[in-house]
Image (cartoon, rainbow, N blue to C red):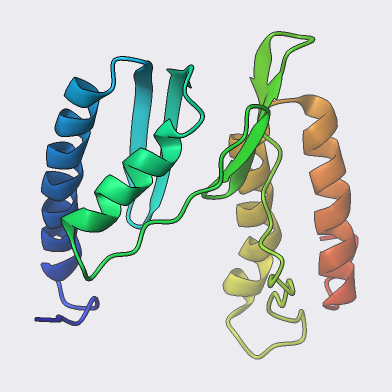
Length: 168
């Protein structure tokens, strides 16, 4: 039976329900598959990031099929890569040369950057906080100064396109 996600207790209940189904599937999967090692499993609402080591290329399909069998109301899909993956607001890139993870921002293809126009009749503090909050997001999520500056440049141009002033 469906529930409205806007009500107070539905999102936590949905998270608990999905968590229990996933853990049951993962426990069974781990016992069955000795050729893989799940290093980390992260989920935020409907986004999952699973990091593992495996020698079997079909193992991902097996886990996906298992998760899809746990509940007929949920459909799990996946994208796998040995070099980069999108998770929430970041691209997670494995830089093998520097032996580290890099995290530039991830922007969905459908994003049109329709920030409030500077001339909007919203309260001035709302308009003035748009550059600040978007800049804070860049600082929090980008892993390197060069990536940060590139994102600041992009943000600056997008805000100018929406009528924001360069002096603000």
